[in-house]
Image (cartoon, rainbow, N blue to C red; front, side):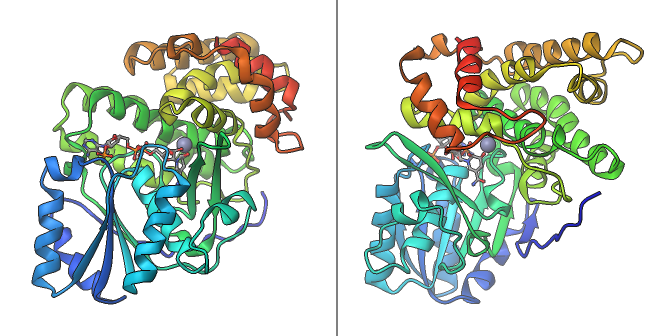
Length: 390
Ligand code: NZQ
Ligand code: ZN
């Protein structure tokens, strides 16, 4: 069992009646607030009006950055940073999914630069220790951005999508009202759910320390939660229990509580970010296509027991099989879940993606070294996995 530090300073208000605390939380940082949101979903289901009222009631001056794209662009974050500088903004309020929250974090970091440009921080791998405070209102159970110190920003000019990290990027406060996710389209619900699932299996589970039972059980519980509640949320979008389970699973999967000294791999995320960077696809969908193929590729006598365990604990595969047979069944169950329960198309060719950029994507994903994890992966391995996804 490795030593580790757990420290997550994000204060979470979870539930139906918590937005009444928004005014007091914003005022802790000041009265000049930049509201960041996406393409308008928050207007359709009334969250925008609620925020405007709270601002008015608390004598808060609101400025706006709207139109944040799914896979948020560095240019949008830079635009927000210029607004912050011009209007002396005290705190940024993000209302939306992971893209909106990530963009808000980009704005928060870029504002403290003279040139208001986030890209040198993102592309330079700078660990961000200073930024404007961010408060997040989550509307999509998916990325964990509401509770983590990461912001994934895309530069479509260079076909790069890169995660920028830093302690200063963890939201100071997050509001998680499962009701805000009732209006999510079926497809986004499925994609978000698979993102949660993959954060566990990709980041921690298989690279985990099998002697740390408590941690493994918690990781498996988060994945089981996704398997159980996603079909319910897809069938009954206004099922509070389903939305609440998924929303808290989103935060748990990436707020570092599941890290506990494990070794991070993130092979599927590295591969998916390249797909989004080149083809602007939905993150969770890309992950669903890549993950079963990655498992098949890394399957060996050595890795089979861990993959088999995952199958028994998460998909209820029977005990007592040979590790290899069990592991194959686990991978089949995962594929079936993605294709038939989440209803996601499972081939890159379905998304009009061919092998043109596989080599460049694989090289960029590896960043000059192998991707660590249960099995080290080099660019040639990634090209093979991409081909399996065709
Ligand atoms: O833009 P609006 O109009 O708000 O619509 C969004 C968008 O079209 C819509 N939506 C969100 N909440 C809704 C809703 N529609 C109706 N009702 C609601 N309640 O859903 C669409 C997708 O939103 P987006 O924010 O892009 O989705 P998601 O939360 O999955 O975020 C994806 C982004 O986060 C990054 C991904 O790479 C991607 O760029 N990630 C961020 C991470 C992090 N910060 O730690 C980790 C993740 O692994 C991931 O990489
Ligand atoms: Zn993700």
